[in-house]
Image 1 (cartoon, helix red, strand yellow):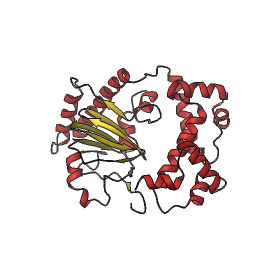
Image 2 (cartoon, rainbow, N blue to C red):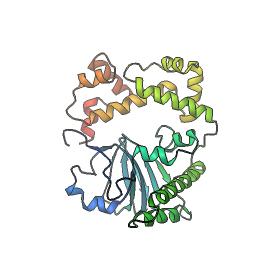
Image 3 (cartoon, helix red, strand yellow):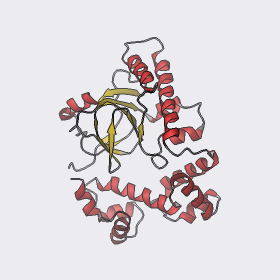
Image 4 (cartoon, one colour):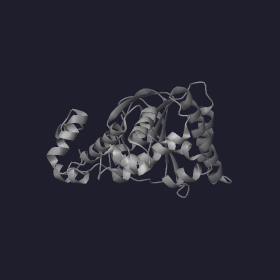
Length: 291
């Protein structure tokens, strides 16, 4: 394992001003020896990525779990997630990479709660199976064909429109395959909760603190968390802290005392106990499982 987990930035091809790139998985596989990182090893992305598998069966690594994938599987990867490919099977497909600015601008006119749902691993599985006989494939082919055009007229607008349609189609199928959240007020509160958690997890792991910051009771926050993700608010907090710990532990150069302090623990012993309580492993044992 390399000393530090690679942080992969968005590196566009010719359409550098678009903020969108579409790369065949086969190209990533064929060029892996020429990359400055091995895509089959865990790497943290600094952009958004929709991976659409068009042929084969295999698996994909997302935030320390392997997920089975097959033909017509769509993977949602959000910024800062850790992922890795597995090229041992004959998987084919495409990565649709895009920047945060492209994401925000593309969905500017859609409801905020819809946008929040799109790339939220706490609310939904990152895996969506697109029905075989669906028009999703037709829209994807239109997007791919337009992307491959050279200097097409008004190409940026056409690509953005097709991309929004494609993602909207996926969300339609997601509603029929997963628990569909209808109460937008709950989503808005949960969104505020997760944002507060991102900003303050290293300061406090108290569910009461977050409830007070939201101006609601601890009981109300628990009710929302259970309704949306089937977890208590404390469980949501612990899961988030453990995820940040795992992402940091991949960096083999960080010491336990440094990581404990970074995550808001008084000392390495308390952090180790907390980590083992929530994962069943010590931080050292967890790192060894990734080698």
